[in-house]
Image: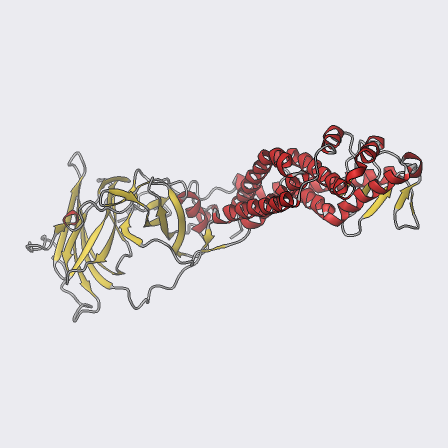
Length: 543
C-alpha cells in the first residue's frame, strides 16, 4: 500500500506557517529591544519546527494518568465508494513533485542569469573575484559549498580604502555566520512548500533581518566607523536580478532600514546573552510543540499474555426483537467486546461493553454503551457475581424494538471455568438475588469520560477500501477537564500499519463529557475502539 503524503505535508506546512507567524510577530520588537542579531536568530524556529514534525513519537512511553475502565461508543468507519478507480489524493504526490521541480528549475534559472550578467570573473591575488564589466548588485557572496566574494569592476574607484575594508568585512561576515547555507535552506523550503505563499512573504523579511544582523556585526567591531559604513551602503548599486544562493543587493533593498539601524547603540553583553537565550527557548518551544502534536508511532504491544491480566469466559445470548443467537468470547479485564444484532425488519443494534474486577470477592463490573441504528440509547452499568447470569434489556424510545443481552462471566483461572454451563437457549435465566446492582450504588458521584455526542467517523483509507480490507483500532484517549482531547495513542490495531493514521486524525477532533470524581470534572483516560467495516453486499445480513 502506497504512503499517503497528505498528512505529513499538511502537518509540516502547518508547523512551518505557525513558526513563521511567530517570528513575524516578534522580529520588530525583539530587534528594538535586543538588536538585529536577535531578530535574525528567531528564524531558527522554522527549521526546528519542520525537523520536529519528522521525528516519530513513541507510543510506548509511560502514561501519566491511570487508564479509565469505561469505554465510549465504538466509532464505525465506512468507506465511501470503495471501488472508485481514482481519487484526488492519488494525484497529490505527483502534483507536489511537479511543483517542487518547477520551483527548483525557476530558482536555478535565476541563479544562472545573475552569474551570466557578471561576465568574466578575474581572481585577484587576495583570493577575491572581480567582475570585468558588472557594477550593479556587487559586492556580493555567491555559492554554498565554495562561497566566493564577488567585487564590482569599479571597486577601487567607488569606495575609499576604509570603505573597502568595511564592505569586505560585511561580505566575510556572511560567510562566517553561515548565511549562505541559511539561504540555501530557504530556497529548498521554497521548492518543497511552493504552494504556501507565506514562505515567499517571509523570505523577504528573512533576507532583511540577515543583512541587518550582518551590518550590526560590522558596526559592533567598528563602532566609530558608522558614517563611513553608511556612505559605503549609499554607494552600492542595486541589481534587478535575484540571487537565490547568495547574498547581494537586490533592486528593492531596504536601504532606509539599514541606515536607521546604524544609529542604534551596539547591544551590550547582557543583551547578547538574552538574545541567545530567547532564540534557543523559542526554537525549543516551537520544536517541542510541533513534535508533541504529531501522532504517536503506531505499534501493537504484546499484552495478550500479561501475567497480571484477569481473563474471563463470557457466555452471551443476544436477542433482538425475537431473533436470538448465543456465543462465547474470551476476554481480559478492561478489554472491550462488541456484540451486534438485527435484521432487515428491525433497527440495527450494537453494544460496546467491558468488564472490571471489583474489590469484593467474586464480583465484576460490566458497563458500556448500547446504540440503536447508530444512535446512543443507553449506558448500562451493573455489578454481577462471577458465575451468575445477568441480563440487560433496552428498548427504543418508541418501544417498537427491544435489545436483550443475557450473559454469564466466569474467570478462566477458576476450577472448571473452561466449560461453564451455557445460558438457557430459549428462556431467560433464573433470577439471582443481588446478582445485579446498579453501578451508581458502588461509586456515587464518580463517572468516567463519555462521548458528548456521536463521534465523527475517521476517513476510510482508500487503498484498504479498494481491497475491501476491514480492521479495528483501539485508542487510548486522554480527555481534559473541559472534554477536549489532550492526547491520543494507539493501544492495539489489526492489521497493523493500515488504519492508525486515519483514526488518530479523526480522534483529535472528538469531544467528550469529562470524567467526574466526587462530582468535579477531572482529566482521565478512556479506551475507544474504532471499527473499520466494509458494508455487506446488498441483500446480505450482518449480525
